[in-house]
Length: 277
Image (tube, rainbow, N blue to C red; front, side):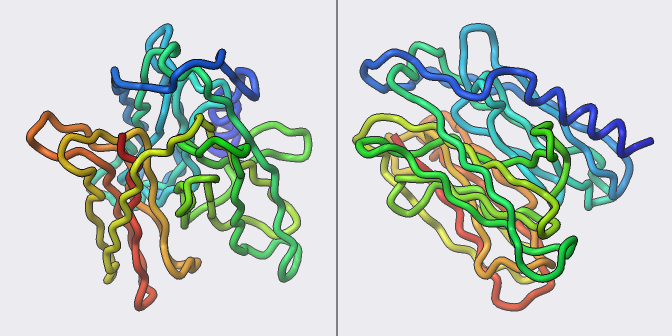
């Protein structure tokens, strides 16, 4: 029964169109508004949900936490954010989800891209790493990406667990997403938004994860985050991103991105990435 409820809930996340684009003009998002939702459940439940931007606004990043995250990103028409995760802490039985939104007119010139991927390693049905990067067209950079799963008919499904990466690439030409799922069974879709160059300043901050750990990737003074993400190195089945979300503070306090992770594997490094305007 719980599985059917989750499937129905995830399906509502993708009721809108698959791509969106706006007319060409200067790309300058500046007026950020956040929308939050708390997804509640029992300890070790899988929860899924979405949150919408106000009318006339589009999302530039998605974030979530308090859970072993499975997938996170923008809804396909860019009007909000979604997340899927397992409530791994009995003391915090909710997953906070945030969509960071700007007026749609401020995303003029942006488009979206996606790529579909299915792993075929090991035996069919084995849980293996699904890792893929979607690339933006020449002359543009990636921001506001994410990933999710679909079944054979193309309908969304809450497959996947223990997310390993949801981050812009080092050169910002693409967006990488990685999580574990069933080889030869599950199908992953990785998405990103693409905006005209020049790209933002990229700030990458590493943290050691000894059991659990996390930290901030702060933008330089006078800069604000457009988007951001995080990744684990090496990606291993018994590690998971637990938090990944934008941080917006009032100056002179710094803003950027926050992420945390848990692992029982030695030597795991968490990289927190901020794209700073």
